[in-house]
Length: 562
Image (cartoon, rainbow, N blue to C red; front, side):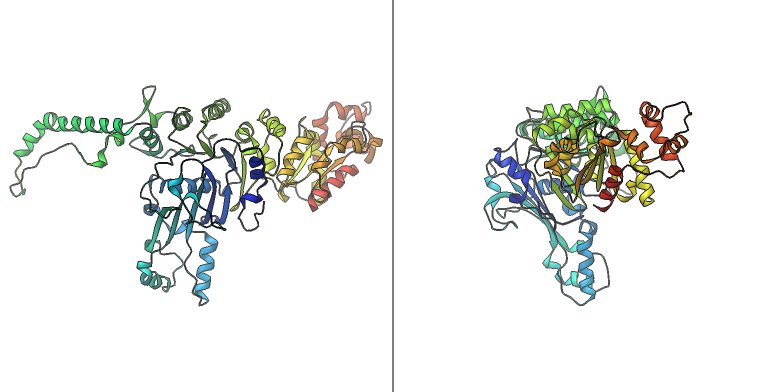
């Protein structure tokens, strides 16, 4: 997939082609999202080729921004308020804003930056009322979708120009307008009835009257209009009864007040305006405790249950922010199982996570990698490999996904020794050069190299020969290797089967005894083999110069130069 300019074509995405060839997988409401000028994203298209899409990336990479953009374009709201009320200058892409003001200073007439978030929808899902050709895709096609655009209001063109001529470096967003419309061109004032989105954010609990805004929204959507109206009428009647009966004595006292009331009578009454609606006054309870006082992990679980009930067809799109927050490992295991069990056939999920456990358990094929305003997906990855990592949810897959370069080694002792020889060569630890050394701990080199190849990741694998020739050991891996960026380095059988005799073959027995601090009676190779990690630590801490085995020296140079 081409991400050189941040734009991915659906036809170029191997993951999409794989889904289409397989006849699609799962329920898809959103086909793709194009984000232009919003926060980190100058111009990026995110293709949703599955019913589950998991975004991963470093901190500040833009994962949350993608979910935020989806929610805002579908609902017209952000943080519980309309986009127009929340609009601020820092929504606009910093690079585009800098270029704009630089052009102005140079005498140019560039128009101010704008924001556009387009949601392209499945045209076979009863969404034809939203279909039209008012979108950015070329060649133009009729398809359903919505766009939220933020642009200068031409009614204030003079005021905008006056502000920009004042030498400011801040966009005058007070003179901008939010246009929210369907691809048909119809202006939206509320989210389309055909589209509903449930927002689950476990990072923070934004509360009002001790109940999270999104929980109120979920509860409201589960009530039929008639039920909602019936409760509203009953609530007004209760408030009227409070006014007539329980405030009557208070109002009698107030009637006798003297003062500058100009002959008008003062009284109290229960508020009957919309700002005191019943759904703003009730608080959900969990085991007799107000929802806001329940544990944060429990709150996340309840939100998920409300949004993802298989029998509830209202929330067609569910966005979940970092579900692992506030949860112990046991609770996270239950939550991930709940997500898998509750996923309805008519729901599409977009999720961000920092947890390898969540990513492995829900499926690596759902991965969307976010990196500094760009996104990319896997190319081709076999179902067997997806299932392999799903059965090994504890493996730190995200380290592989997020690393610049990766070294696969067989165990902790290999990891420690590799770091020592890398430091000897370049006077820096590998991680300082963006090289992450991952211990396989018995995992399959083939699976990890397939994963690295799917991500086009620069990596090397180090392995013992175990008495076999390099040709035999490479045969099963060759399809994932690339001599310019992915290679496997195997120890020479002539020097022994494992790491320990390989080290002894390049360094004298006397030197190794000094480094390891063992007695003359001990056999060096036997002691090292029986104390692998301890021996590796002593090698790492030793002030003596050691010569690395050739396969390790070659791997150090390859990954440094890759």
